[in-house]
Length: 459
Image (tube, rainbow, N blue to C red; front, side, top):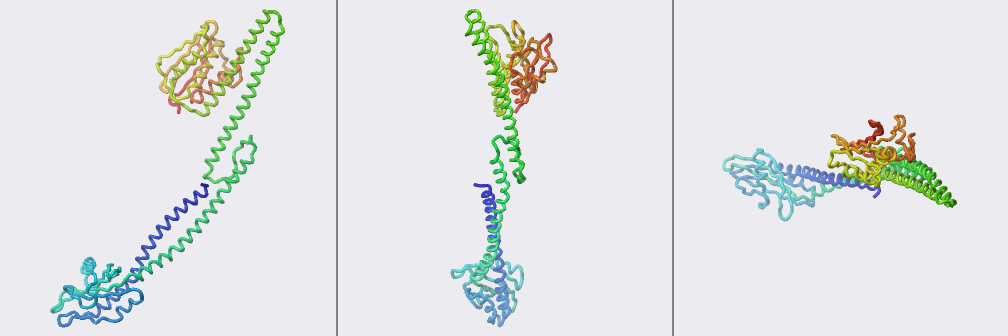
């Protein structure tokens, strides 16, 4: 369903509930008003009859006035019944089988003389409304209550109540219909700004990621802000990807050109020694190119997984050992000491990208400070709120003025590094995606210490 249909549908349900409430209210009021109107006629008729009551020779006498029942003839379709009876329920005049009401009689007796009570009862297959008037007498031979009961069927009453209900509901229905119509067109007009914004976005070029600045309803602003933030992040990602591809192509062009030149030189040489020397050069450049490709893939993996942040519980100590196993050469030329008192190091995070970060740190330490018996220490320490991972080597280190610069992609320090300049940027991306920090410091006795701090409570 469209937004307009949903809003109008909700308003229609609300109006329908209101109409039902007003219907029952009007029905109750109509019945009450009709009863009050016709009850006054019944009361007048009963009072007129009561005025003619008299006691003669110990008997209750009544001279039934014509006008007493004539006033009820305003409802020609209704039937009228009456009964006058005295003490001991002895009928003086009228219909002797009219139903009574103990409650009505008790109410009149409590109220005193000339009090009136009204009640409904079934009589001869019809619902009849009765007025009961009581008058207490005390004469020689007659003592007690004399009752005047006048009744009328409810046809005129119900008809009047229905007219009142219909008269109330017709304007209510008309107003409700007009209100729904206004809501329909009002919502359509309110949504026109969204339609204009949609048309503006659809006309944009694929590379146009400028924020949406069209005037929109206040309720839509959170959605527009989220879309603008998403487009901003998408633009940053696209710019980063373009720069990455351009720099990666530049980085790969050099070793590929060297490989081709060395291969051609080896092919043109007839000296076995020159041929062997050329093959060794080809192998070195192939290894350099292989490492570059691995780092490019590692960088892309870390960037992607840092954005999606699908964290799971894993053992950080197991990730450290796996990184050492995958990175340290199997010829035993380099030794990496794992220093920790932990048996397990549970952490909520992305074990894959943290393992890639540690592998890059170990690889940097091996290339710059681990050759020919170089000492490399990999330490894991638990603090109350974080894990500390330190990789220490005995290489030349990094000057203080270059320590911020080396975290940029494809930037190398001035220590003779032959890498691509991706190792430390990969580490920083992985650590910051976990809310951690990375610092560089000098090792006592010479060398470099890289420390990663990973919060335990990252979410």
